[in-house]
Image (cartoon, rainbow, N blue to C red; front, side, top):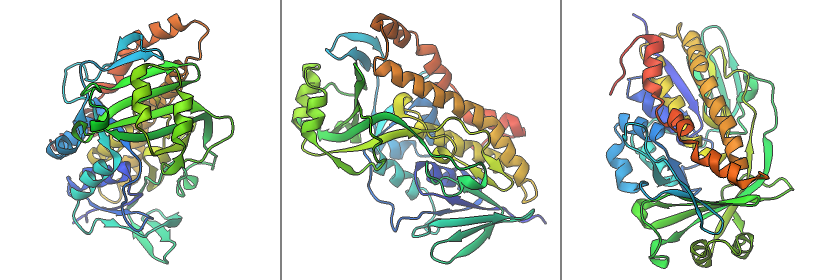
Length: 395
């Protein structure tokens, strides 16, 4: 009898945990290795979009999401910096299935972790080495552990320690912008519109605002230029007065929101050009280790969830001998899709930061972007993967 496969997932962020959920739901033995001593509450808002939300529902997490998220719908819109409206923001796919929502990153990590058996996640495991043979993949950890598996999924972020075993190492590309982020309790801005995502665009900068935790928190992200490369930490303290100065003279609604900010954090925005490949033998990349992207399409977490769902389908029923071919199929399916979204995020950043001589052209492009958005939102990662292997998914 062929034995069940054993899969290691390196990285306990959204992508790594989603991969573990996708695999465990199909009876696959998956273990997550996270370098931190605990899964902590870092970061702020994450925007789930229809392509990601549907997959989380397919994992059985819809009820848990509804308890912590904030649905985004009618009234979501793009504006010029003075508040002049440009266009509505599409928040659902073409069939109006479960759509966009704001979720605190810690809440999403918690939902994914809670969906896993207690022994799935091993914290305090920093991966420092990898080797493989024709029949096994071996991980080495800083604590001295050396463990073998049938396959390894590297979900260890933009500075992945394992990416070097797939492609030549390269430094992430600094975008020239930093993002101030944080949130304000709704009771401080009771007039703020409910259940909407709002985005203001001005010269070299833009501001995105949407709710979290059922609307109890108003999450903001202010993108501003900075020539000197900035650190990437989501928890680096920023200066609220500097944040307010960056958006002085903008729409009074923004002014009032920023007046309530007494703590903010910032990080430097980086991505990479699409990689030539994601897989080498029994090792493959997922999420930011494979396709770090700028946040200007709101697709970073959603693409990681698509990766996870695809692997769940492709590894279902696989034997140890099958795995290299199954991982190559994963790369073949996912790499072109993620590369298109990476490039779209870069292009959208130029629009949002008004890098146009003619702002009317920018506004037209924003207005005409609905079909591109729908091509992202309507994508069915489960169906694409099922077609590749000729099986039906667990719904």
